[in-house]
Image (cartoon, rainbow, N blue to C red; front, side, top):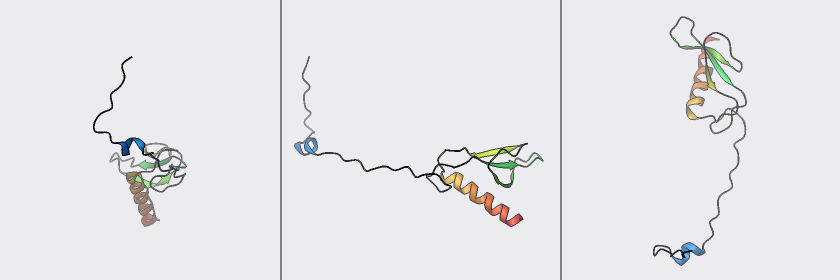
Length: 95
C-alpha cells in the first residue's frame, strides 16, 4: 500500500487545530420564518376562473379549487410568510 504524501499547503497550525462546530437547534414549530409549520395552510382560489386567492387561510382543504401554501412540518420561508401575512391582511380588510 502506498503512503500518502502530505501536501505543502498544509501548515502545522492547520493540522493541530481542533474544529468545533456550533450547536444547531431546531427552530421548533410555529408560523415564523425558519420554523416548521404546525399545520397545513390552504387558501381557496377564485371559482370564477381567475385563479386569484380568496378568503382566509384554512388548515384543511376547503374543497373546490385551493392552493396549498405550506404543508405540515415544512419550513416557513420568507415567501410563505409573505403569503400568510397577505392573506391575513386581505381577511381583515374584508371582515
